[in-house]
Amino acid sequence: MATEIERKFLVDVGKLSALTFAEEEKISQGYLSREPTVRVRLTGSGAWLTIKSSMEGITRKEFEYAIPTADAEELLKLCGHVLTKCRRKIFHGSHLWEIDFFGGRLAGLVVAEVELSAPDEVVDLPDWVTKEVSDDARYFNSNLVEGGLPKE
Image (cartoon, rainbow, N blue to C red; front, side, top):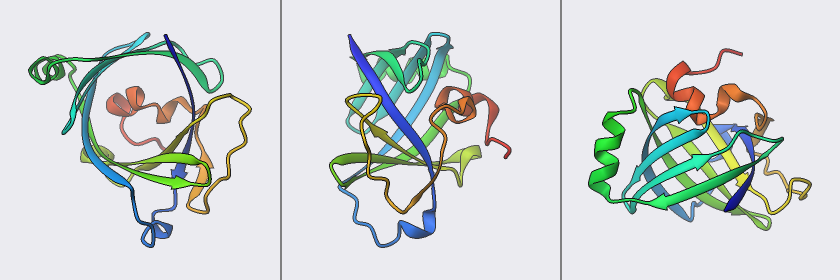
């Protein structure tokens, strides 16, 4: 069993133009269940089924399994709504940041995530992150796919 400890932030896109990203990947994902969260994800490099427990602060249990691409394609058809995003990765300080540029009806939303090894781990925040949304359920992907862009 793995534990996911993650902080999420909104991004000032204007400050990203000078950055060089380590990696870029297109992602399609849908949800079979929201409690517990059961996600199907399809990327250019493979497909996964992920089960996540409820959040306890910024921590939750996570179980992730590689599945055949054909299975993921069929499972996504069962999900109702599917979100798309382009994930770009960049190192800042000692952490790898994943920046998600959402597409479709979520176009314009950009969220950065950083995984930690402990909930109280100190993170050097880059100048391109703005508001922290780690505990704002409106920004959970499982809610975004159903509810659309959060209203501030």
